[in-house]
Length: 155
Image 1 (cartoon, rainbow, N blue to C red):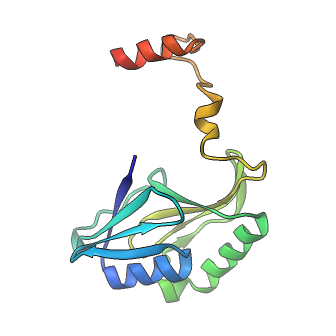
Image 2 (image 1 turned 90 degrees about the horizontal axis):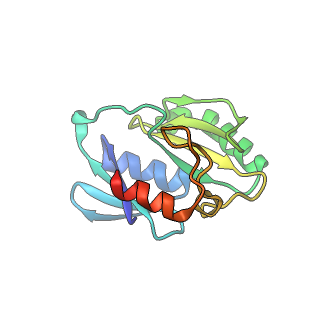
């Protein structure tokens, strides 16, 4: 995979939030769009759509990893303190959930962000290295790679 897409009301205000608050690298590659990344080959294309923007729910969020729980707490305190300056609409409380310590915030464009720390050093590749952990629709588990391949081919 190479990229994902999100929308914004105003490119200038959004870029300021991404660079100054989230610490993301941004490059404007088209009049209505910029590319956004944080130290990896995958990037987000942010497209300015103005008032056509439709808010999304929390399930459609972007995760930002930090090195420690203290960094999560610091980012949370900053989000509360700088809420008005950056147009942050909502800031959730930090919590331990699904293997991470994190909090969610809603930015000026109604996009959700999760600032998170994996206490056990969880890496992105671990999702795939661990393999399937849940049963198929018929209740059986994926027990062999060839069974998984057959299931994917017939889907």
